[in-house]
Length: 216
Ligand code: AP5
Image (cartoon, rainbow, N blue to C red; front, side, top):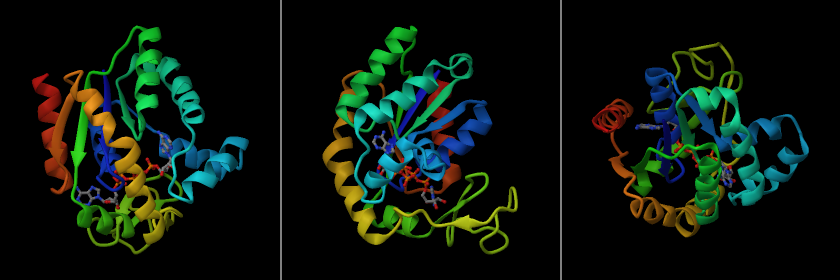
């Protein structure tokens, strides 16, 4: 089973993917995480991606699609279900994804569209903290760690993403509206979209996603 999570920055794609992954024993494939991993390791791809990510712009389609194709073709991904978080993000990526899956004899089963309001996503992004070691997500108000700046799960220290500042968030929102929102129509035309009210608490969003998946 292949499930896409679509939504504006801060809609809660990563948070939902983390709980669905545990519940369903799926792979969580986040292009944002894959690119940040490359950046952390100062690879050529990471250095190239940083120029775009720090400005809130999208990394060129061909670079991201290459990363995704490699992941989707891996044995692990072919044996398990996959949650695609942050990909596709442009009309071209949506078409590329269909072509990659067709080659593999697979398809997208569900597209979960997390619809969240602007004040909610701004509050979420400005307060987000991430564990440096295991990547677990926190929020200083909504989901604080037990001990300030320390990950509950692994004891790692928490950091704020370089693109979670007000100016870059503004650009990311504009980029989402101009380049990503249209893929919702693309998946509507394939009858795959399921819309969820993502302003609600994580538990409610998770329960609704599970209901959609179980109802088939
Ligand atoms: P990426 O990492 O994908 O960022 P994004 O899409 O902007 O999404 P976020 O990770 O910011 O938000 P999210 O929806 O996952 O929310 P989260 O669950 O963390 O991409 C970063 C950059 O990489 C892009 O700008 C681009 O440059 C590049 N990139 C990535 N993919 C690309 C692609 N395909 N093509 C080209 N470029 C690409 O939650 C946010 C906060 O809210 C957390 O603190 C969380 O604790 C809290 N929270 C979450 N849900 C709830 C809830 N229900 N209630 C209360 N609080 C909540």
